[in-house]
Amino acid sequence: MVYRSGAVNEKEIFERICKGDEKALEYLYQKYYRMMTKLVVTNSGTEEEARDIYQEALIVFWQKATSGNLVLTSKMSTYIYSICQNLWRKELDRKKRLSNEEKDAAVSLDTESEERERILARCIEQLGETCKKVLMYYYFEEMSMQDIAEKLGFANTDTAKTKKYKCKKKLDELVKAQYSEQDFLD
Amino acid sequence: MASERELELLDDYLRNKLSAQDKSAFEELLKNEPGLQKELRVQQQVVNSLRNARAAELKRMLNNVPITAAPAETTGSSMIAKVAAWMVVAGLVGGGLYVYFQSEDEPAQNISADSPALSPAAVPSDKPGTSEDNKIQPPVSQSDVTNESEETAKLEAEKGANGQSAKATDSVAPAARNVFEPTEESRPNASESSAASDSNKGVAGVVSTPSIAIEAGINGNNGKYNFHYQFKDNKLYLYGVFEKNLYELMEFFSNNKRTLFLYYKDKYYLLDEDDSKIKRLSPISDPALVKKLKDYRSSR
Image 1 (cartoon, chains in turn orange, green):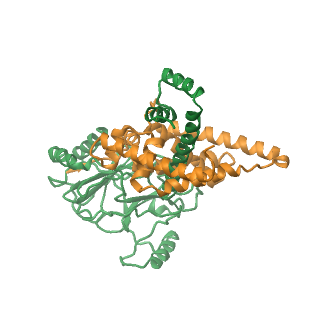
Image 2: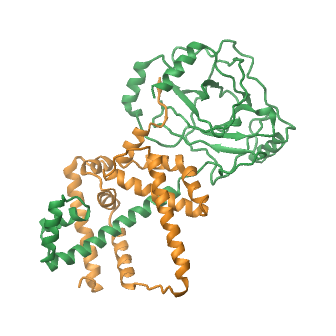
Image 3: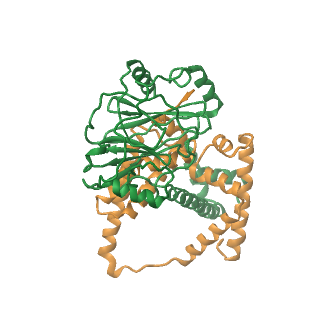
């Protein structure tokens, strides 16, 4: 007989998050959805803004945890809540500034950097699924090679390193080929 | 063109992995190497783009997670169904789940304890089974017909809400007086060793799809179901005021059979999944069993 409570052991969930377990992130997302979005909704935000802020906050939390840069000194919910508070405060400030300057705010579109971003996104899309994952885990989650190997089922950390190296090289080549076409390399 | 070594340094620099000393050394190097500066700019763009792509991917993932809780605002008269946060366990055999809920008022306490022995549902649901899109799921009053279409079920629900055609039994089936005498194998404490060996098989698992969804309802106006439960369509409905206090669902698996207990305000309730009638929640009074359950809870 097995008894496992999901009494969601805070520590266990946090450890899974640190390892980059997305299911644990989804779990947290659901668990605190009302609590976190309420913060925004009761502070003159819409349901949609609330969701955005909460998602952003959770992703900040996730990124810090997976990169090993987070030593949790409070409950996860407390921590995430404070990120939500900060993000929402910033957003409110931004809105306020925006409405003050609205009249003379000239939206300058940096077409070159937009074009660059499009190229980059296209290059990333051209990579295989595994390559994409390896590079994202490496640069966004900043996971260790050990964790990347485990998560993607590589034989060992050396495989992960080699994979990362090759994928990055491929991406660089793709990008540079495109960049030189557009003269972005100068 | 930057050397491999420089690229490596660059990489660590962009990921903030350099020590303060190495970092300033690298920045010093940068000053005198326009080629490296250019490379840094490109790499910065590439890495930022990867990061943005990943953040967008995570956002999409979160957007696809169904949010099943009802809106926070409740009115006294409306039926509110609130779906618990659930935690589920991978593996066919085993897993348990605990659900935290919050509830507001002390429910009526019923000391009678005539829960029948269980023959729990053999097949745990494998779909999330929760209402999507914040839909409020009205508690459904169950008629004798079990295979109703959804339409019919809805009608029944409305009638039930008006207290007109509710056919819920006020107490559980007139079965064994013995407060849940669990069989040796389904008794929570029965086989520590097998629990251990099962978890070695990887049950220690993953949060995945829930095995059951729970919805707690407030039915303020309807005195008839003030502390009741019902299994229907693989969901557990709780009737009564369960809003803000903590409650938990304890799920035990044994040979693919599930036995469920509800923990609420220091009392344990056996949940009979046999049929989909609305039954009153009656606390377990067998001190031995209560103690076992308590031990399990506190060991978590």
